[in-house]
Image (cartoon, rainbow, N blue to C red):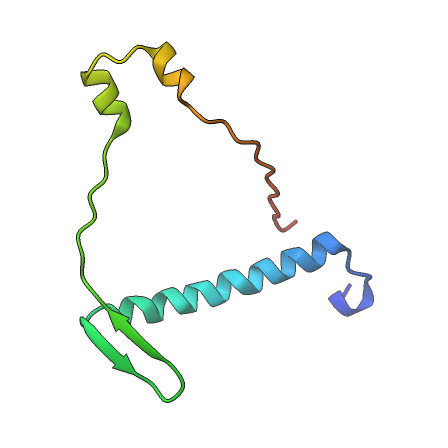
Length: 92
């Protein structure tokens, strides 16, 4: 059976779009990695890019809390919970 011969459902349409996006993201990531080899401004005919090198510091909150002996109740009191809806699409 060919894809043209069947009626595509919304989930089929979404799956096909996500597959195309994944392929495009792979191509984009390869180009990004190539461009990141040199710091500075890069000019194209239609677009321009700027590659900068910087340092980012992050704090391991769990390690700090453990070392400071922060009670679990205090952590729970100041922990925000947010509802999340997840949709996962896979091929058959």
